[in-house]
Image 1 (tube, rainbow, N blue to C red):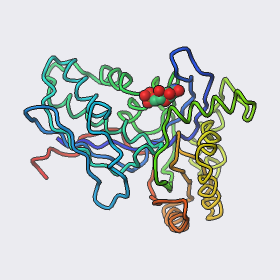
Image 2: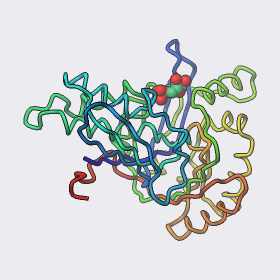
Image 3: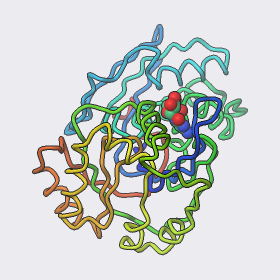
Length: 312
Ligand code: C5P
């Protein structure tokens, strides 16, 4: 069984105050893009995991843990426990999504493993894990995992896991500039809190994303470019000042919008069309602060079976 799941970019990340449970309330507008990890799942004697680079992808798979810290491993264990079976599968994770890059690659792998293991172990005639149950398990694994199942464009409230679809008239063409070395999501949220407490940045909460929804519905990339925003950007730039040069380079190359993706360090650039995206990618690839510049389009579908391994 092979399942692929998409990367995401946050078109708007409105961050509220720190909650008692250690999370922040969010208005988190997710957009899935056509950059996919694949998880190959095969029955085995016991749970095993292997991580490899998708051919042609510039990702550092050495950073991905192969133990219970791996979100796909947690997903397999959770599905097995819920269905009362042994988690006896070999997971082969083929990565194209930047690692610790702010594009929810680990969450995509978890969503893919959830879907694959449910297909493998659940009874298709009377499934225990219907769509709602799978979304519940996804939220247990991480705030971004439910969106990787759903894909498209959606707003996540609460800690980001309570999803509602958002109407978007794409396609929109993007370039993602990756950086060497990841950023820790908890560290970026903590830096955001620190900057706010120090009065260095203003916290605007509650957050109104009405202008972004109108831009998405219009399908106009110019309007969307002006409506993008990320409350974590100042924190990511504070921890990794070199990202400022990456953002400036994309703007100089004519990007219609430029922002840090999620908690970074990947930066996202909106282009007018596919040809423009190629030109922006070429300009970004020449920058010292950019490891790779990858074009992709959104919205992309959520986690889905590609085809059974036997057919490949
Ligand atoms: O849910 P997930 O495990 O992906 O979150 C990783 C970390 O990101 C959390 O431990 C927390 O520090 C931070 N986070 C947050 N508020 C959110 C989502 C994540 O502070 N809504």
